Image (cartoon, rainbow, N blue to C red):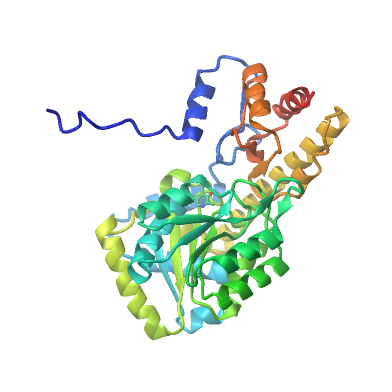
Length: 399
Ligand code: PLP
């Protein structure tokens, strides 16, 4: 009998399934708002000029492609630390941050999960309700039971503050708490500085382990502003983990450029933690790829290219904001039976639109507008050509 005869079909990824259905749709005015990437005004994934310039220089240098160190490119890891904690960060000068290049934000979460499993084998992991769909799967794969803490309040389109704090308090001590630093996926609803302070107090009290996931730095309010959570945790004196990603901020999705940073209590602790982290990486994929991280490091470490990147990132951020604003205005002008002002207050690429499963279904069937069944839409997939059709369709499914 074949080794694979009894293998069952794994459940389909709902988002990829949606894209397949979209591709098969022959309607001219179809729009895919189910995606998780930034599209420019022309409806394409941008190739940033800063990236092109760095790539030209790399090609000209004819650099050999030897193996990288297990923890990746040193100049890249250092640049990641400055971006997360600020160039003047005491954590960095005190040697209290360990950073390893990772295969995107996903790779960083996974390597972090594997390391934590060795340190806290019996811990529970808690993710926000709702959260990026891969959070649960990643930490379950690392062997942890995964629970949810309350986060989103559908009535107010805001944060369920008391629910969140209560759930964090009620978790067993030393639970691992996954937190979205900014541009919460899927809701677009973020925590403010006060919320973070209160969360930090509870986490300290319960000796929970914060794992901050920052996949959209620069897409919310700005590079520095979006690092608020990382900076507040840095000030708190706690030990914590950060997974970060340049997939979105550099539009380098397929290059898999991310990092895992761990904040320790001393240089000595850092050296021991790094040695263990290297073991985890070595037995996963040995060492990371060269291209994406070389490009990101040369952009971040060059004044000129960094300026260019910041301007391009700013353009992406502003365009999403404009699309959110335009959506709110058009829906109001077209007489939508609901106030959508909250969409303009959300941050990042995603928006919980408040549309229910039936309305999302009607959007797709009647209008060729594809969204996730939870009502999540990607505001970064809107542009001035498709937004009119999208808002018309939303008005109609609300009638
Ligand atoms: N974390 C969150 C919250 C995300 O939304 C994503 C991507 O969608 C990631 C991590 C992973 O990003 P990457 O593509 O860099 O693996």
